[in-house]
Image 1 (tube, rainbow, N blue to C red):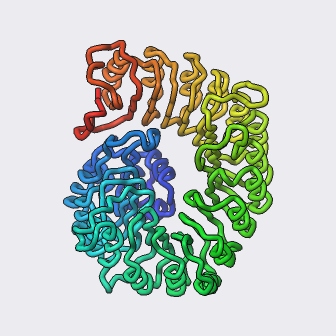
Image 2: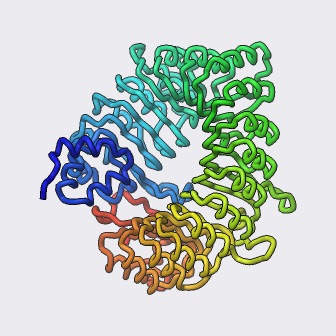
Image 3: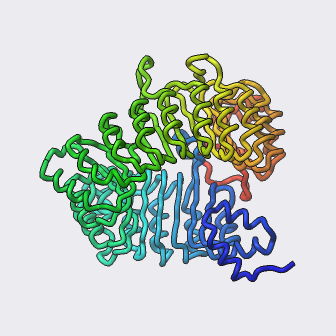
Length: 580
């Protein structure tokens, strides 16, 4: 067989930007596997406990960028102190891969020691993204700012930053969180992206202005709520080239002169395509952002809890080019109707729940969903939190939006039926999986029966992640899904009725399943032990259970997390996690 030279293949592989495509290339033949491994620069690890850093570096010796995930997204914020420590990985790469340039950590425990090690160990380090992480403070951020001379990206997104340590940085308690901005050396002019919107403390505004002024290539800037409009105006004057802007606070400012200056600065920022923020709000300054609305393709108002619905609609009515929209459910059905009429190119919509609503006056219903499906035919990703739904509405979505690849429905009461017929949502979700051939992620909510899982197994051939809010009650639904969805890798089940025998048999047969989260189930400890012996390369973790259950095989397990691993049981599990 004739092979292309390795140099030719490397140039071809370099054109493949997605990890999915690179992984597919590896399966062609052993020669391609070897060549691709030697030239892959960006590596993504979905579970930090699935394998060790030594295996990653041995497989990809020339890697420059690493994306690493810790805590499973299934459990959200309920799995406190589960683990996911970044330090062992950083220690290994500090010793064995000093040429690392980019690091993206998601849902991990990142200590100040870890950040200090990053800043001192990687001489060409350029990009750090921390997403939903915790364990670090301004001390670690100061180390990154001080020592990473070539830093281009620093992204802090939805993290828990330990802020009350100002005395360590030589400032008053509560002020330390912003002082790390003054640690950037005056020679630093390389920043392209700076995002500290998740921080809550006082910001060193003078240091921030100087930093922005000397970074001519800055394209993304997201501020926290401690940055007032007058400072925002000066920042925009210094960086008119911005493409992504996160606005901090508009509250407690009623100075009309500042408003006019801000509006003038905004009108000169003609490159802004993405807008987020509005953590606090003053109506006077709302019109100041209108000049940029006509060019926006992304608008994230999921944190704008103080923004009233009428103000939200006034903003959206000016955003006719939107492709990505994140809002809260206080937008209401009327607001989503406006979105459908205005944003014909919308591709991604996420509607999150703001809070409790009156039972007789739901904030969001199926009417908003119908309007979106009829007005936004290009939609491919939809997250919809509402108070009520119908099968007919879901069937309408399936008919109007066949390109959906990600669909998540979250009803306030996860066991509520169709509010017009009192029937389960089998036919509605069945229509979704039948019409949306490319569906990869699906989250179910509402009353379900075994029938919907039969539909999923029959039609959702491309499905990779399935989340079930409440199961139908039969013992065959898992069989339907696993036998039909051959690409399924992640499965979350709440209120599971599955017996041990069925669980054991189906999981062992389905080798593509990477991880499984089950809560409120009838699975017993004995069943878990039997499974651990049948599948030695799978970690089975019992979450938050009393030690008394160790002697009782009939004890029903409340929460369990299963994932495949090459490393065996982890050694850093807290007392609340018991690994079989």
